[in-house]
Image (tube, rainbow, N blue to C red; front, side, top):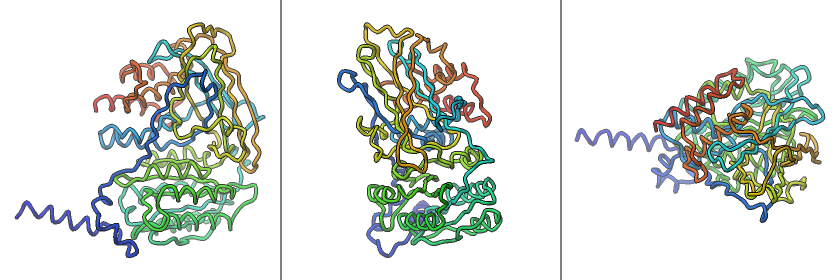
Length: 486
């Protein structure tokens, strides 16, 4: 009988930990699926090589998220396991890191850079890197902000790595705001409620006290919370200001509108209101990563995953400028010359692909970039047998973007010339971002990983000396070593 007691106790604890919803009793019949279903990810597959004779133009939306990197870091360093393949979005691993790309042309809110080198994991191929840098945040000329914190306080948020972690971060966030900014707090569990009306940030302690008062319990009416948050944001809308909702949740929506497609439709309805979105995912076991990433993607927003106190500092303090959008609906288009390039493959951005005609269609949604943020994309290309690119214009990068308060896109271009540079002689930007891309292919066992290895990646990283104020790049070197033993 003694051996049965722990099982009975576990069974009782599971029953009591289930969030009760009397309108949906059917879901609790299969409570094992609720408790142990695990994190949910969208399967995006992997971009293949494309023939330039068939499709010579590649078009995609930028991705300024960083959630996938901090999530895979949690798997490797905390759980000591490699992440599920679907959890790995290569572009988010690359764009997690701050890079000191130059911003020296105030004609546009974003500047472009790029280069070509040989490919370190397949010497018959080349790499083509596209870099973007957003203008820095001028603290003396910053827009007044209207923030709405939308915080999930349902029962599933009760653990220390969820609501309590978010509360700590939101209090740090309050300290970064100007006294002229405003913050409202909306929570949702079984229903949505206004905890704090829009309050001037000169009353920082009042806002912090409201955050401290939050506790968890109940089911998760996420859609109702989203609707309420947008209503509050519009009621307090600042014309020519910075209007943003920041959502903190594990994404375990189970009351009202709860399936991914319907939630995306709801967000798309709100997208044109002039309110931007930041989505913060937390926790493990029932993290609905797929839905949170798509909500941010479709809602003029970005998505981050919070796994540690240091990650809180990165999102709320070190990268505070990203809460200020400088360009929206940013699209990239590259036209390849079939006489020079036989095939090409965009590494990552699988769920950010656009049709060729979408590039000039100003009704087509795309990604946003915050102040001082950098974006990188890497193509692996197979040159034609006859190709001689030395000092020839290899590609033209075309970009279209909109200013945050306009609906008409602005074009910009940059020509890239091939200097026949070996990877070992390429910029530290190329070495570092290609190393991250290679690591992503290695941990997912990509068919395109070539002859890369953890030791090769470590060697490439050790050849770089990029600015690393907060030690995240150095931490990545440790993650590579940790992953090699799993």
